[in-house]
Length: 580
Image 1: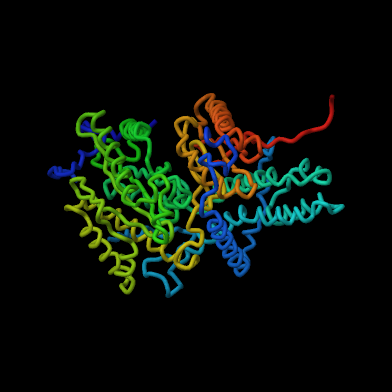
Image 2: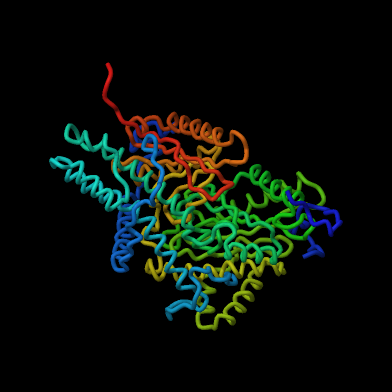
């Protein structure tokens, strides 16, 4: 293990730079209810706007399908890679400076309709990934509908397998198909099976192919990490809301390399303060012991970011559910949680230990961000922000260089007090990246998303999911135990009671716990952790499980290696013949 450079004998006085305190002079250095049947007034009844949500999903799916056919992308219909695993069971506005273009997408923008700082080629690559991945999930229901019409044909099993392989890229479980002639085809089991297969393929592709070109060690990741240190921050820790409409906030909304950002989502963006303090301790300890990402005596700071969300289309109903679709409440709660974290670090550690804070809002209809630019003294104004859409309009007719200068000036002017130069550079970079995303939504979604409400495909429970970076793919419920994560999970089950259960389809839940492969017994403990959480879910939502309306997939992953999730087992089982 490498130590800090021997050439520097200076003893650090604190693990981070002194705190920027508001009002202070700047420093010199730079089921319970779920166990009843949905719809019975148990708190998990379908959402009131169900028909609107379903229609939104259908429109979005149809738009993706039309675009895929027009572009004739064969990759969107590709089957699973050779050698894939087989399950044992079912087995005002702010913009940022641009970062270097990804090597695989480098080049000038060909389209003249984009902002001068937008990267059209990256937009096209991200669009292809979105269509390919979401398409794998959205083809499931149409395929099952076709199977329903075929189930009494003499060669049903062969036709079903051919259709599934062609459209979904994987076969279907034989026990379900072979019993279709004696009873109705078990669509609930088939639906859950197919969702779990699509998730497995997504994980395989993400880690094997690096479709976002942002894995650890890539040129893009290294360039951003260097830029972050130049801005005066040694780590960027981001907590978006667990809402699936923010799952793409890092890779798409902010255009940051996912491997260079610590991300953990929580309902309402209300992260766990104690756990975050522990992660801060690990980060600072590594700086002391290994000098990574830089030595502890270097005057850089740990930056904690909260991303709350709001809706410009339907602000009273489609905002953050955890805050009653109240934008002000969401922003105020996020800022308070940030300050609680800062205070916890200061109270627990001496020598001026502290962190820097940043509050960002995101419009889930257009992906435009608004940044509450902090002052050097740590002050943040909840009533004023820099909106990326305003920045877009203010810089649209400028050259790229002039636009960057204007963005930096807007960021500087948006702070409630004199801002830190490094923070201005970082916020300007974030806003610049978001300009590309604004154009992305305008290019491919008509300026705002058709599925502006919830339209997630599955619930992700546990700790992990590094591979999920697509909007409305997953509702996150990060937790160690169901008891501590019950509020997040209950919200997810309520959402899916409207999306799926109301149509007779099950809620797919993927459990995931990552482990350190270098630690003896870590994999086995991660599997046991999955099993405990699965048992708690089956107890909490017993009625749903008994009716086949909630299925779980247990997965683990070695976080020390760039490998896909490993499937352990699922709740799907089949009756087998034989015996008395």
